[in-house]
Length: 132
Image (cartoon, rainbow, N blue to C red; front, side, top):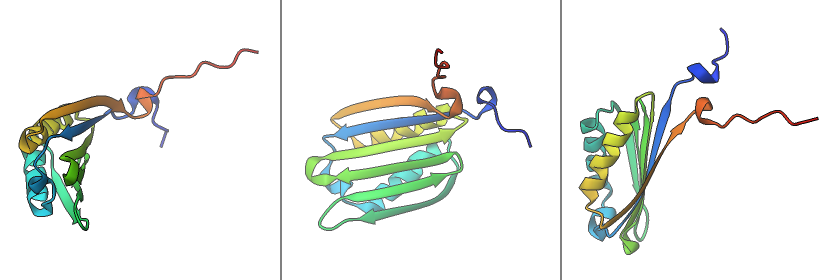
């Protein structure tokens, strides 16, 4: 099998969001977050594979929803009303964007800092050969 060249490599989209002003109660409830993130993934067009959410003591949750397209993760700091969320999909950028929109809406953040970028060999800037 021939190696994949950058021009034919699958595209990926990674969307990151920093959310503040979220409810501490919601950010500290792993079952609610898991149900909500699974619902957002499905409604956004992703195919669910599995999920796992962990509650830390005394507070905070980290969770992952594995989707056929890649993953959705969250890490929360309820004491700060803060959640760090990322959504990564391979080959279907519209799904990553849709899932993130649904998550942002579901967490009712007061402020959102969001960034989105392509992932994969095709997105790495090509280095020019060194001059001799």
